Length: 305
Ligand code: FDA
Image (cartoon, rainbow, N blue to C red):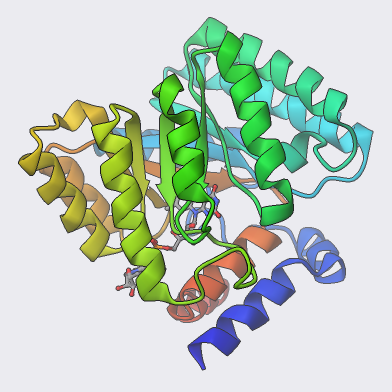
């Protein structure tokens, strides 16, 4: 049953028609609950509030699988102005983005041009930009782009997904860069040809990757709401005397707020991923797929306004 629900929401997450309807409806019901606001300006107060509670942030302008040059360029401008506003407002925030939002599905040179402009701005303001990892058909291109940017910029990082068989090798290949890496379980619908179908195998692989990444000296972000993974990381760090400033925990905005604060109080860096923008539909459906309990949470949000 759990697998059917997950597949259903992942199928819905790619429905262009429903996405359009969702955009027209606006994101006000999710604002301040699952997303920051419908634009960056209206998200600033939520980010400042998190910062005041000892939590760091990474913001993501929602929108993926962009298929027009015009929109990809708009996303680029938005990202540049977001980085500038983070710096101007003195926020403790990084930026996350998706290569498809900058035109990966349109033209390779377009993404390189757009991302170069973003990283030039990020480097100037010393703000880290993390390239989110998308689905399998975009994985190799994303890793290749990351390597290309990493040769020139220090303020770029990326994400590896524990559910993919290939990830252990990708982690080894990236080892020489000692990158800032975010490790996640993986959020897309992938076939057993590419990804572990069983959750317990994903969890085991996740632990193996965390250990390898930390022991390689990568600054590692463990992005999970799973207590078992969080406890494992804490124990591992203790066992190998890895200081708290070599890793951090990350969680999504609106999820496990108490745990986020507890981890920060315990002296760990805790970063909250705050999405914002009108294009919230795909993000929202993937959260539903991960945890159907989010459905109740979301509907409560709708009716409370
Ligand atoms: P999982 O969903 O496996 O849940 C394990 C257990 O944790 C549950 O059984 C429950 O006990 C507990 N739990 C989970 N959610 C909870 C909640 N809301 N409240 C209470 N308990 C809860 N994916 C991707 O493919 N590419 C990417 O770039 C990113 N980026 C990203 C950034 C950040 C900051 C995060 C946190 C996640 C991502 N992801 C992602 C998503 C990721 O791949 C994954 O789908 C989700 O984090 C869900 O997996 P978890 O490890 O959180 O636990």
